[in-house]
Length: 117
Length: 118
Image (cartoon, rainbow over all chains, first blue to last red; front, top):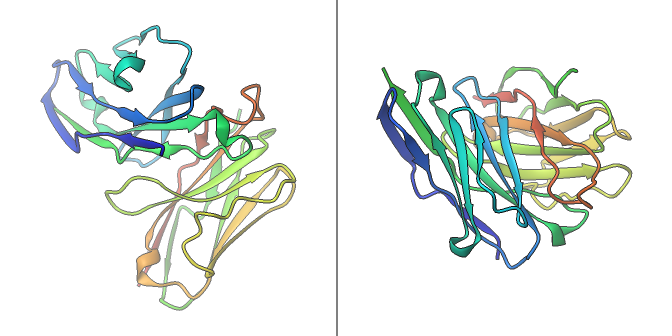
């Protein structure tokens, strides 16, 4: 069965701290895609990254970095030198290739990150 | 270019009334999704449209919920005889057609409609 687990419900850090948001997924498919979205207090979901299952290279984008490890079925997200504007709920999601024409995303429950000044 | 737009932004209604929510996807996106997000919760899939194919309605919670989409344009989500438990944010997303063969396309979200049923 497909499943995405974000074990951390809430995280609170002080500005400039590094923080890692965990995402663990379950799938039987060999071809799948993983996503991270950010939902700031305004409510709109903002796409951050998509990664396919054949690309295990870690990715860095500014202060954001992602660590994809198939061996542990994890796709963790790290924010370096966090800022107050990073305060949001972050969602991890999974899409399986074998779902074919049905492209539902399987969503984690989200991690609420509070960055305090 | 323009993103996904939704209207109204906020809707307050009385229990038992019908409501209609609108979603305008990104131009050229063939896939359109509706989700529900209750306060403090994750996203709950409702329905998915892909071009002219039959929609996937597997997430609709009851027969009071329905949605339509004309071609690859606007979609409306209708909730009949609203109940207080329908209070939530209703999110719409669209995605382009696949070079990923039907999976893995990034979904782009609208700002949502906040529905409050009194």
